[in-house]
Amino acid sequence: MKVCMLAGSHNPSHSRIFAKETVSLLQQGHEVTIVGVRDSQPLIANRSLTIIEIPETTRADKIRAVQTLIQVGHNVHCDVYHCHELHSLVAGVFLKQKTGRALVYDAHEDYAYTYSQNLLGLSRTRPILERMLYLLERFLCKYVDCVITVDDVIRDRFRRWGVPAETVANFPRLSSPRFSTGEAILDLWPAVEKNRVFVYTGMGIDWRVPLIEMALAIRRVKKRYPSAVIVFVGKLWHEPSRIRFLDFLAREDIGDSIIMLGPVPHQSIPKLLARANVGLCLNYLTPYVRRAQYPVKLMEYMAAGLPVIATDTPLISKLIRTVGCGIPVQPTPDEIAHAMHTLLESPQQAIKMGQAGRKAFLEQYNWEIGSEPALMRAYELALKSRRRQSF
Image (cartoon, rainbow, N blue to C red; front, side, top):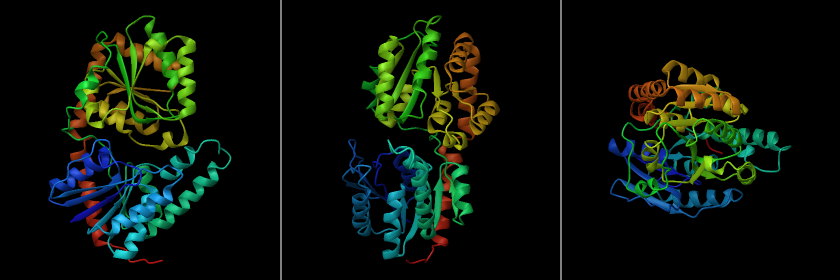
């Protein structure tokens, strides 16, 4: 089988696209072409892997990205087009009409909700935009042979639309790759006492993350544990939130409690987590967060053997309490600080939680056991039930 990955906003080295899906395909003898945004750390192609880089476009210029994907994708000989965003799905539908090849749509998240929420200054029109994007997604899915999603909530929506769908959860691999690029980054990690480092990781830290609440919590914890710090790994890209947070840190004089490490290569995350003691998986309780399933960071903390402090949502709380790997909280300074104190004052309990999370990762919540079989089923389903609709 030959698969062409179409990614109009993601780099070829994106962890889900390459380290998980592409590696699984290559290991089973398939050929993969990744069409993605130019990467600062380009992958090395081989006989079974082809990398085609395209220029990066702005969020407002998706039409040009679609045009580029159609032009490049049409020249790729494949059996399946695999689209990784809503706008790349537009390109995939056009390519399917031209070539008759199977089409898979990879819904990394609830794109309609996320796209509409990330548009600043348009709060009154967000519900309208979200509805329009859902209608577009539903229309395009008439031509999709199979959808893969990151959780059952999104999967069930596509099934209600009559579209074949599989959950391919974004679990970490049992053996996450660790490249040498992480070594220099370790020099930036704070030298603090044992049981004092809280870590928050994220590809993009945005307005949904309770930054100020976490800062207020760690300030309270420092009264008893002066060396306690929170390390944020990832880009704080939402400009109003970034300005408000940095102003708050300067005004309250608690900057020494917060370390903004910035973006790091995803392959370095396991090494960085090995230096931490507690993983933070906190978001405001937006409608999307309430119904979302398992964030990638939660699974990575479990894989690293870290106890977790996570937002108390139905699915996350059920997992944490069943596995016994952490403490669910409301995203308020009081509850976050209380959970931090609990883990610092009971290090043996924290270790047991981390071990329980690691055990659950090894036995169930990993890519090889929990995700890869569903990915292969999705491809088989797409090839068998190839839809023939035309415009």
